[in-house]
Length: 133
Image 1: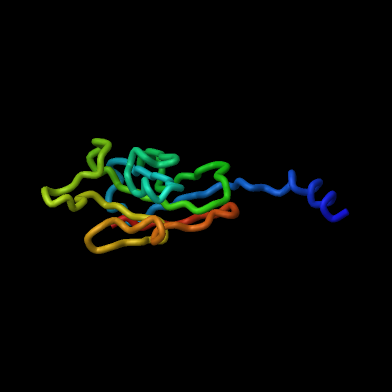
Image 2: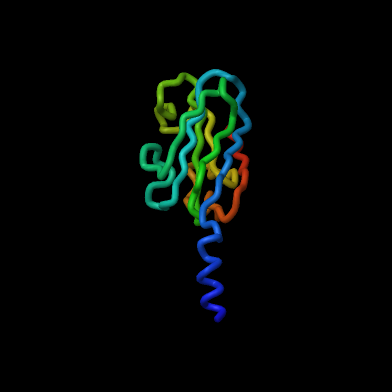
């Protein structure tokens, strides 16, 4: 009997919801934000290998909502493309010269954080904040 009731209610339980990413720390309105969503630790944080990505002109605001995301673990990488050239610019030593940030505001001294350091569980409609530096 309980299995029948559960089977009838299962279609009404949602396994997807929206995720809004709010970005702070931008010191200028020039350029655009690259927001990349990952669900695979092997690809994080390589831009171009993300599950979903968005380019948000700063003239349109500092947030984006990923609609109807499955409930599971994700990590996010963001960078402020100051010169709108489509890449995270780096100095000759490979250190980024444009502001960037990660979910959970994870940050390491000499490398990008791991997926585990930046990941979070998405299980309901939520908003997360990321500060770029």
